[in-house]
Image 1 (cartoon, rainbow, N blue to C red):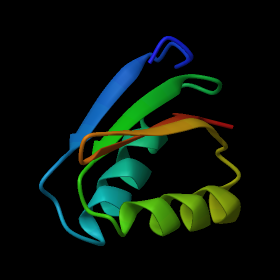
Image 2: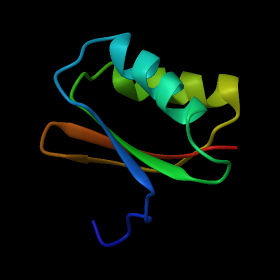
Image 3: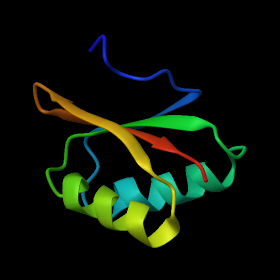
Image 4: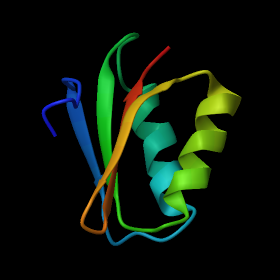
Length: 79
């Protein structure tokens, strides 16, 4: 995890099923300042393609991604 970037906020979406991690992420990012980074943690395997698609559609880049055990972690920077 030493390669993981720093983050400003954490969004815990562990245990939530599609589409709730993305719904919560969208609301969370709206409340952030430009260039801030959120660390999203999710356990639903559907989060991987969902976050990628959401990032492409909104322009908020995923700057890092990793999986630790069954937790997918995404660092997303607000555009």
